[in-house]
Every structure is written in structure tokens, then in C-alpha cells.
Image (cartoon, rainbow, N blue to C red; front, top):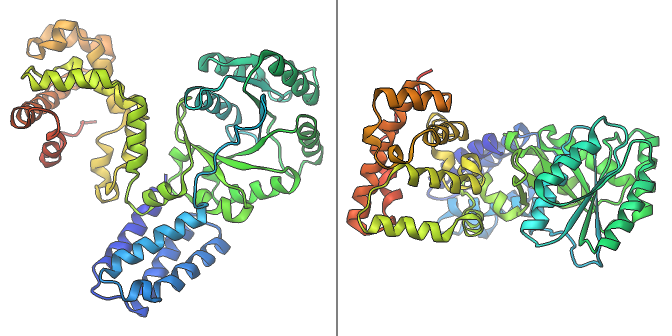
Length: 455
């Protein structure tokens, strides 16, 4: 998310950073570039105008002009204004209401409501330790009810069954009664996709809202629709009292216009962003952290929180102890690190949060992706325990067997073995010098890029 915007803004701010002093002229040039970057990101024009004016007012004041490092001060101004634009702080769900807390999800067709219900169920269960029940009031889309039932089972939450012959209001009322009797903490209500210009459908969801009186009414919107996402959310809010927005498919959105427009146009906070297809791919929306990502400063705090939440500390200590005792880094260790990385959201999610990632050439970033990591894991999984611990024994017939078992080619096996040999050397040198893995990343940074896969 924000790839294009980050690249443009980083270039502009880098040029400003190199100025000894800031003047009204070079600030004017920088603001022109920032304005163009925001418009290309499909941010709504009124939002862009107000944002540029806010930055200008602060930039031409003493706050920047008299600063010893004016370039850095302007970067701070831009980051602060981006944060203000998106809402200052993370607006959390209201989970303090009497149980069962009802959360109603609305949105257009194809925006990802049903998948988001599953992601939100997982988030509430794993992060907030809540018991959850889901129910589908979508009696129009074929297999919508069955889809939610399947996803609920995958996440491990209760599901209230319904059928297309029932009325949405009757389904919701029955689910609420069942949730109350079962002592469920949160009831998530899925609804049919609808257009705000469809009077009958809007009347239906308004009646549904009146009947169950949800604590949260969240509008689910596809971020790739850009500023149209904000305009659609505003139209819905005119009919339905929304409490927040969930942006979906942000992993496929290189512009970011929706995230920068929604709060200003609707007055409603973005509460979550969907960052992938898996049920774990949902993040709470922190404006300050997103602002840092946009200007290329990464999101280290989210990285740390994700690591603390998902990394197996006992396994990590065993790995560090193994290296400290001088025992070699083998494919089994590598496989475990891949699993840990996936638990943290995968390569794409991690890369997005690394400070300075905007300075890395696109070709270099493209060399490391989730698809290649999955291929590596498939190859390792096709090895015997002995082959994982002693990779040097992997020769002709073993390579053919591993390639067949992993659905890859002999060239893929050779490439992985070569890359792994380089990794082994780095880990061995770092552990010998430091006695642990603290120096590994520094050494890896200094190495040349690994060979690119031939096509």
C-alpha cells in the first residue's frame, strides 16, 4: 500500500532535506510536488487543497525556517499533517458495551464483507479474547450463508444458521436471542451488498439497524476504488449511522487515496485495514504509523508488536543457543524461520513496515517475495530429516526426488542450495564473532544480492 505515493514523497522530501536553509520558493516547489503526488494517489481534491494549505502555514512559519535542520522539520510537518488527516489516533472498537455486543457490517457488493467478518472474528478471538458468533443476513447472493459458515468454522467461532427464505430482520433478531442465551461476547452481522441509490435495499438495512441497535456499524470498502471509496462511505453514512470504516484489499492498492480521503470526507474513523487474503490479514488502523510508512520511515512499532505476539520465544531461544554453541545453521532452522515470518504476515507485510524500504530498488525488492518463500518451503518440506541437517548429501537422485515432491525444477533446488550455502557462511561468521545472532542482519546487509531466478 502507498508504494507510488511513498516513492514520490520520499524523493521530494529528500531533495528538501539537502537544502541548507528553506525559503518560501523551495517550500513552494516542494508543496507543488507533494500536491501532485497526492492527486496521483487519487486523494480527493478538497482534501489535497486543505492538506497543502495546512502544511504551508506551518512550513513558512518559524517552526521550519529557523530550525537548524529545516529539511527534517518539514518532514515532521508533513508526517504530522498526514496523521491529523487520517485521524490522529487509533479509534478502537467499543467493546465495553453490555454483551452481546452487536457489530453490523455494510458495504457494496464485492467489497469483501464476508471475508472481513472472518478476519474480524479471528482478531476479536485471538487479540481481545472474546467469544464470537457470526450470522449472515445476505439472502440474495448465492452461497453467501454457506461461505460465512465455512469461514466461521475455519476461524473457530460460532455460526448462527439462516436461509434465503427468511427476512434479514428476522434472522438478525433470532441470532441476537441465541447469542444472548449462549453468553457470547460479540455478534457479527453480515449483510447483503447494496448501492446507496437502491432505495429498497437501503430501507432494508435501515430497518435491520433499528431492530438490533448495533454498538458498531462498520462500512467495508475496497481501498482500490480510491477517493470513490470515501464518497460511497459518505453516501451510506447519510442513511446509516456509521461508527467507522474498514478498508479492504490494501495490499493491492499502490495509491492510498482512500486511506487519506475517508476520514476527512466522512468524518468517520478508519478502524481496520485488510492487508491480504488470509483470516489473519487484518490490522488495526494507526494514523501515526501509517503516516510514517507513507513518508518512508517504516513502522517499527507494529513490527515489534507483531514479533512479540507471534514469535515463538522458546524456539527463538533454542535457535540462539544452538548458534552460540557453534552448532550449524541447517535447513530445519531455515524452515522454522520461514514459519515465524509467515506468522508475522509474510514478506510483503514485513517489507512494508521496514524503515527506508522506499530507497531499495524495485528490482531488489522483487527478488524477495512470498511466492519465492513458499517455493523454498515446499522444497525443504520435500527433504528428509537427514537432508535438512546435512545439505551436502543432496546430489543427483536426491535432487530429482525433491524436485518431484515439491513441484519444482532441478534448477530451483540448485539455486536454493547455493543461496543456503551463502546464508550458512554469514550465520557462522556472525555467531563466531558475536556469540549470538545479533550481528547477522548487519552482515547480511553488506552482502551482494542473491542470484535472481531465471525465467
